[in-house]
Length: 179
View 1 (cartoon, rainbow, N blue to C red):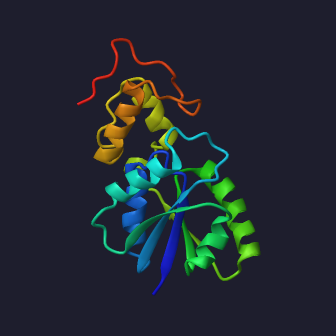
View 2: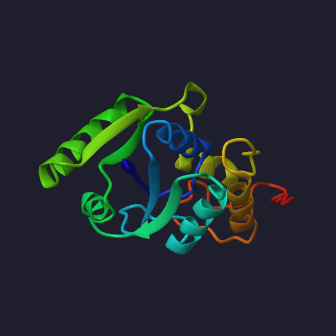
View 3: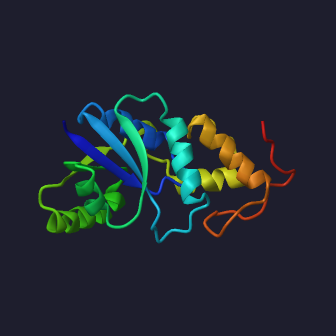
């Protein structure tokens, strides 16, 4: 059975991530969505919140599991029996960083491959950062993230629970409409 590890911060999980997971299932027998704890980013959501949101969004997806992890990604992949790391590419800027990372991972664990999938054209513009920026300004992000994630984002911003990771730190004029 061929298993791929799809690592990321997922702060938050977007429909671009969801698309990559669905497409990865066409290539691999199973996908482990590995939510990273140790990140240089300052996430809006706690590690536990990000894991729970991903689990809820992916509930019912055959052969997809969500797991928290910390440490070196390639070592976690080896421990879980994954033969590959699944990564998405949106633009040339993604490729440069991902290429360096793939080469380092290959140096550390030769038997674990990195498989790149191009992002579906409809999600080329989307990133977790852009989604957070839009949501922090009160924009409608429906259709960009799973519904449970949309509600969690609205809840965070409506309650004033923002961190430095959020591009906009103030509520929009007129407040938030949490529905």
